[in-house]
Length: 469
Image 1: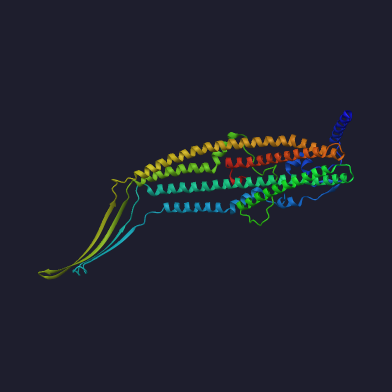
Image 2 (image 1 turned 90 degrees about the vertical axis):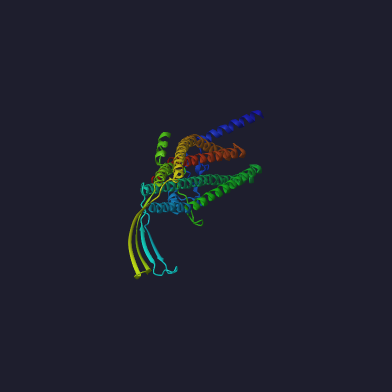
């Protein structure tokens, strides 16, 4: 009995080695046929006895490499039609209005005055005067007000650009989540198709009495488990697509197909080093530009506050015409008419209010803006460093999977499936190895998604302009 068991083990090992060296006619998953096709996440037909099965109709609903939508297309659509971003852009128009208002000069003042003695018993007494006053701003108030409004306008533009940067990254992250779900869905469909073929093969062997029914039940359990997992993955894919539609302004009922390959992100090549990436971020990132412009706004505010401590001068002129009646003179009633032209200047005396509080507030605003800018620079530096490290780690993980894990797992499942069909392995061995392959494929998909996601996050962290992506 012991000799028989040893001989059987040796026989199984020899059969496995033979099948690994000369593989004939066993269906292989489309994702497992070639490491390059694994990286490209294509869904290829499964070949059985020389007949090609059609491509999965389910995947064609979500993926079209020719007429589908790329992440760049969705980013452009989001920037053009996102409602929140459109509302933020209106802040630019408000700032433009404030800039125009800042350059306007004070209006002149016209006053009219009439005096009459008709109601006080002196109907002959009256006086009419017309005056004109023109305020003159001293201390360069108008120029400093324009400088402040110009700095605020540029700061608002930078803030909107930062919103565009964050929206772009959000769209790309959702896109890669959808791509990851799509790849996993294709993997599960390939495995499910193979298990269905194996089920028919095992059913035939059970009918002939060559295999115990328990093996058929085990295989059916595995098929149901893959179907359950497939339903969850498809639901996650649909949720990602719905969120993409919401961000990009695509109607919920409109069909949205993806076109990109998760293994080849359509993004600019990142800088060659962390320090180079940090240098790019400090030069181009819009939120850093917004922080620096806020410093300029605070400094312009201090200059305006100092100018507002200088009193304005209001020159004025007045023309008066008066009539007087004297009726108790020895010579009778006398009438007199007076015409007067008055010139003057009104100047405020800065005894109590020299805008001391405004100057203090503006000085504090400068310190506050500087602290925020310094803190943001530290945050940006750390963000670029961590994102770059994520990208490098994901690249290394993808390389390991492409060169080692996936080819070996593919060869293992190929050998065991062929050996099972000639009775050298049990159904438990086949299912166990298949689960290991599913886990490896899932981890490979996560590595591909993390590489794409880290690259998108890195582009957002360094602040690459939208038109360069």
